[in-house]
Each structure stands twice: as structure tokens, then as C-alpha cells.
Image 1 (cartoon, rainbow, N blue to C red):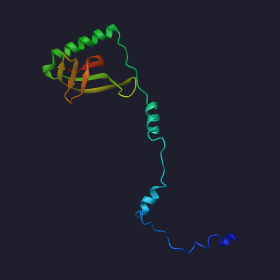
Image 2: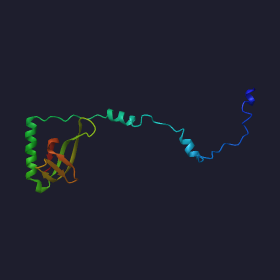
Image 3: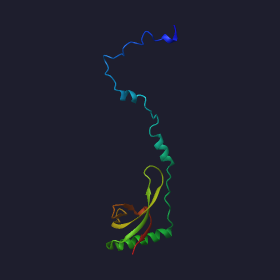
Image 4: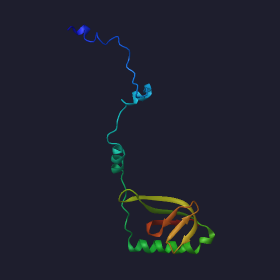
Length: 137
């Protein structure tokens, strides 16, 4: 048989149409050949592993004492709504460590029972995570 006429018996036949299955639109046919991510989420997992977190610093006894005095001063003048600059640790929810944030705001609530400060923008800061407080006069 000659290669030129290999399909001569079927070349002019009409396109087959199934009696049991509906015709597939061209857009769906194209989707069959689109790219496939066998490891979905892998790129995001690698990015998360590469993300660097800080360790929470252990405060010295002197620093803890100074911080305690600042918080007591803050508690005593809370009715004056002083503006403060506070640096605090935010634990990471996905891995060990976290980051240090500094925020400027006014104290909305000083909650000794739950050991938290609540700022006017509703940021909640636990006493144990406070690194430094500057009280504006």
C-alpha cells in the first residue's frame, strides 16, 4: 500500500456523531489540553517555608521592671487618653516565631484581668508580648 493513499478508505467519510453522548463545545474540548498542576499548592508551600520570622526576645529583669513601671503609669493616666507608641510581638499563626510591630494610638481599654491593652483602632495587645511603650506627654 502506498503511504499517499494510506487513509483513502476513510478520508471522505462524514464526521462521526454519537447517538448517546451530547456534542462537546469547542471551549470544553480545548480545556482538555490546558496545563495541569500536579502539585497544586506546592509553590505556595515553598514560599511559606522561605518566609522568615523573628524569635520573641527574652527581656532582662531590669527591662521588665521598667516596662512594668511604664504600664502602671499608663494605667494611672488612662483617663487622659494619652497617645502611646507601643512595640509588641505578634506570634505567627503558621510557624514558629513571629514579628515585631510598632503602632501609635490611644488606649481605649486597660484590661488587667485579661492582661491586654485595647487601642482606639481595636488592636488588642497582650501584656506578655509588649516590648516597649513610649507615652506621649
